[in-house]
Image (tube, rainbow, N blue to C red; front, top):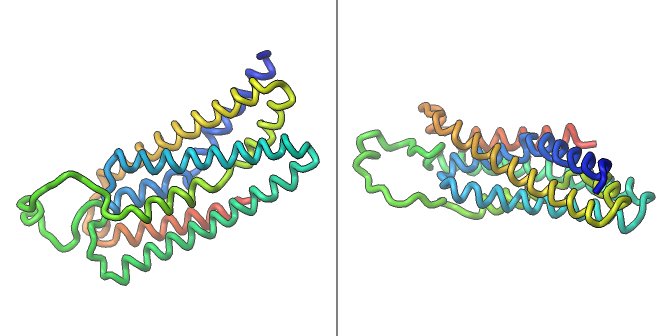
Length: 227
């Protein structure tokens, strides 16, 4: 592999880091993990699953461009843009539904890992078992929503790698996959750890509604920046 191939791999890694740090890749997992009381292991599992799906869809689009030829690039990029816009709408819907579901229930859940209608003495006397996620469906749904949103920027990189060699394509795909997964999981864990210090009566009571609203705003931002 020559200097051009190494430069392409470096471009892939930089692109993956910058793209993955966009909040729609990790912020929803931080917010939902806190209000659902997910363990670190469960949070990492779902974030990794979303990252792997994201990588698979992105690389598949790049390989589709390679298979169909340069003339099909605009069509494939258009499809990817439509998927990204759809993901934004779904995130908005997910966030608003999550917020409405919480408010309609009157807020009686463990918001941000705390129980809004138990006092500290009751909590200290309550038996503490192993931490388990209370509901799994929102997590798996969120993993699919976030994951099924390809990175448009990787398609031309994969196409360029294909003009060099198969080894370059494999190296680019592996670099993109590893960087994306590590960055996405790392950003989620940093956010997860950071929000553990956010405790207040308001967050205790309305953390889940606030999280739903922030997820909806993240989806709105995705739609606004989509090409």
